[in-house]
Image (cartoon, rainbow, N blue to C red):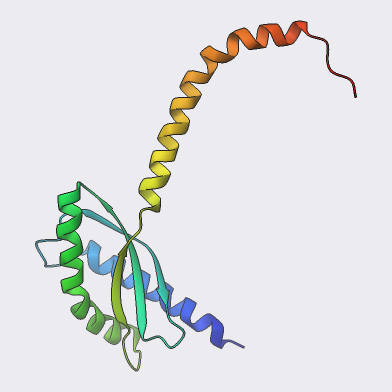
Length: 136
């Protein structure tokens, strides 16, 4: 019964270890963008781990950082094997997580709407107060 939760525990441990590795400063000079580990998904057999990362920077930095992350994956795999004491360390695959950038864009659009709305609401509120409430 505890078996289905093991991949979740391993995924969380991998997320913490990868975040620590990246914050300590991976030695690859191509990793220039600000990298945040957002999530990790591990297969049930613990052989593959997909690490979702959010990158802050321009497109050129993101491309270079993606190449740098791919090149440190094998080093990171051996580090995970040692630190997590797994029989076999999972293969690491990095994927870009655009949800943070998408959420920031949505928040910006909502702020624009909120800024425009008070000016548009003022005349409609005045006419709404004079009208009697509707009855069903």
